[in-house]
Image (tube, rainbow, N blue to C red; front, top):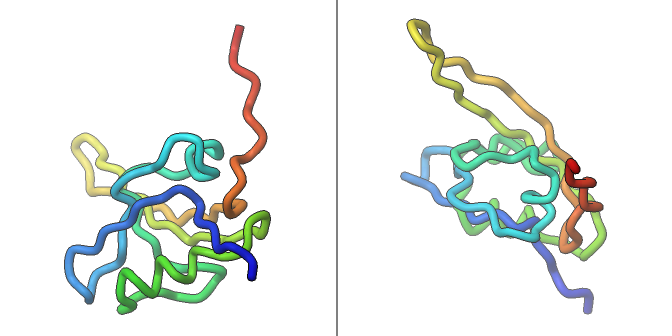
Length: 108
């Protein structure tokens, strides 16, 4: 049996009707290495399957999988704009389960 691996995200859910959101990003995981996921991002889809109305445990299970496979997350990022309405951006992020992405060279 292949060990199931995640992407280094801790999710939380306010109520079962709301979208899960990123509560924590584990250092060294592929989400942290990608730099594309922020705490507070809401998870709208996993591998292009809408997860609205799903329980946290089910969303977490969908995000896990065999190490080395890629999961595509659809995220909603809310940005507060000074003197304006909040902006919501829809992002699609591909993360490799279980493996950190190749480290980016650090600036000199």
